[in-house]
Image 1 (tube, rainbow, N blue to C red):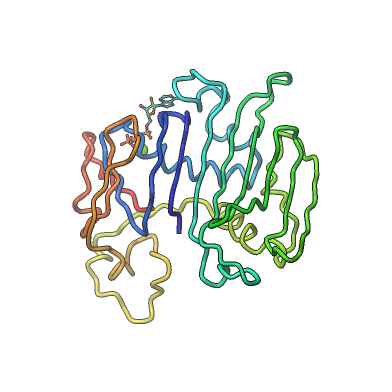
Image 2: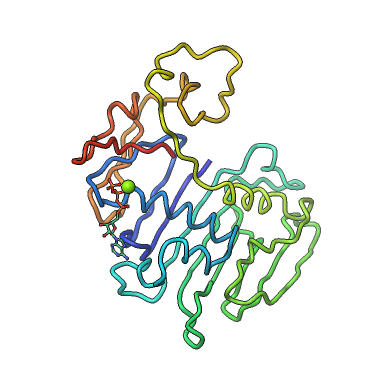
Amino acid sequence: MITRLEARDFCCLLHTTQDLGRFHVLIGPNASGKSTFLDAIAFLGHLVSDGPEEAVARRTQNFHDLVWERSESSFSLAIELAIPAELTEVHGRRFETVRYEVVLGLHPQSGEISLFSETVSLAPGGARVVHKTPADNDVFTSEIPADDWTSTFALGPSQSALANLPHDTTKFPIATWLKDVLRGGIHSLSLSSPRLRRASPPGRSRRHLLSDGSNSRGWWPSSSNTTLNGSTDGSRICAQHCPISKASVASNGRTTGTAI
Ligand SMILES: Nc1ncnc2c1ncn2[C@@H]1O[C@H](COP(=O)(O)OP(=O)(O)OP(=O)(O)O)[C@@H](O)[C@H]1O
Ligand SMILES: [Mg+2]
């Protein structure tokens, strides 16, 4: 589960830090940044799947379009996820969350889209598993403390270090899981009212919400309503008892709730 997203200078998100729970509905006027918030997560997936250049090219031909008001030369994104129970215990140490953070910009000499820094770290403790340094070294350190295993490559600023994580799930169980989650990307839901109204048959998976919402019984949480922290706009992120039906309807008539 994603527990936190941070964006600095990414499109319309000047400085956004948002803690996340199991279910949210994004509500806000048109062009208030709802899609951009989700795209920050998708961007990290594209970065790990296809590399920085392709991740940018999917969105624009001009890197500056992705930087807040085109005023800066770089942007940063960070995501934190709760580590699944089966991976939290690593040889006597207990890690609860994994954090992935990147800074992207144009290389001062070559002008190429570059990863200025990239880090995967584990909490509590902050152990760095993957780290691309400003000197363009990519350092991989085993998640198993007793291993005392570190390896350094020089992949260069145009390649993601996480994308090139060594294929060794004994040394990198959590980073490998993180990479797979990010590569899985964002899944869109198209809720079907007739199917939602039907009784959910027994045996339907509860682990993942099906894209038509037909197994949605038991998914909706019961409380809380929070405001998108640090957002430069008026959009809200909230968990409500009955999500989409209570989400705002945009001026063009579209329902703007989005499950994440
Ligand atoms: N580099 C940038 N700097 C500042 N603002 C930007 C930048 N790139 C795009 N924007 C603005 O961000 C907004 C895009 O918001 P977004 O598409 O995320 O809104 P939305 O809430 O999903 O809207 P809708 O309800 O129409 O789907 C637009 O106002 C766009 O002009
Ligand atoms: Mg949108």
